[in-house]
Image 1 (cartoon, helix red, strand yellow):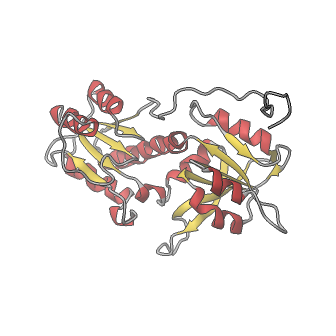
Image 2 (cartoon, one colour; image 1 turned 45 degrees about the horizontal axis):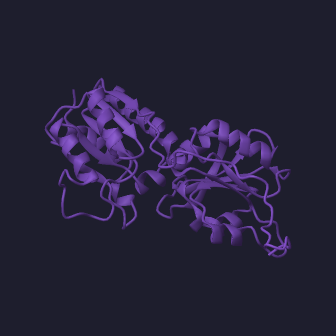
Image 3 (cartoon, one colour; image 1 turned 90 degrees about the vertical axis):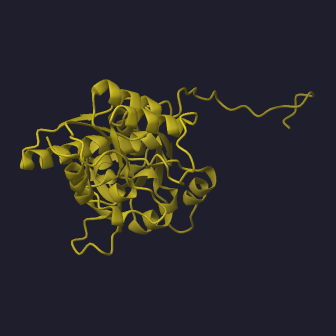
Amino acid sequence: MPALSEVLTALDALWPPERAEEWDAVGTVCGDPDSQVRRVLFAVDPVQEIADEAVQLGADLLVTHHPLYLRGTTTVAASTFKGKVVHTLIKHDIALHVAHTNADTADPGVSDALAGALDLRVLGPLVPDPSDPAGHRGLGRVCEPTHPMSLADFTAHAAARLPATAQGIRAAGDPDREIRTVAVSGGSGDSLFGVVRAAGVDAFLTADLRHHPASEATQTLGSTPPALLDAAHWATEWPWCEQAAAQLDAVSDRHGWGLRTHVSRTVTDPWTAHAASAPFTAPTNTTGAPR
């Protein structure tokens, strides 16, 4: 079995920490470099349910996409939920490693996994990494479906292909519009509307779309804005866990490590219920006239 330090070196080669955004907190959160690694669990969120799953699995290393301490901390007291996660992991000799924005822009990265889950063919990055001469790395991906389909059909396809969440998939645009090109970006993507419009794609699938940016993105003069599809944040990033596990499997095979990788199926999306709205009727005042 390899030492944790060897596995961490391999993870940093897959997702170099220097390629993370300056504000990000990636890398190893806890773990003894000299301990041995046999089982590795991949998950999106380093929350207590995932820490408990790692314990039950007998994992030696937990790799998550989201950081535990993104904005730093002054305590790891077990009376706080993040501190309890740390205590749980250390008590059971489980290391925690984070690959966040360095995995977003990797080749392959988070958006490649998202495109694969949606059966989309990747044409190139949405926002190319200027430090990559091959032009494969970068944020988001420009893609095309296996065949043109209506926005309504593509929305249903995305809902069927991505992990189920309470939110499902919301769409903005003409349901009958033909979709031939799609931009995707795992996680929050409404900061990318400008480059999405410049890419000239028919639709953009991402997560965490806010009212005002989405409303403005659907308004234009002289051109047709892209349709928008809003999925749950967790659902757009979970496919990366399977891709990342396969990447580590390949490294393990090359080195003869015999690692056993696992992907958590625990849904850690925070939303737990959804009720569809009834047809809208304008409220009336006491005289029966519209307000």
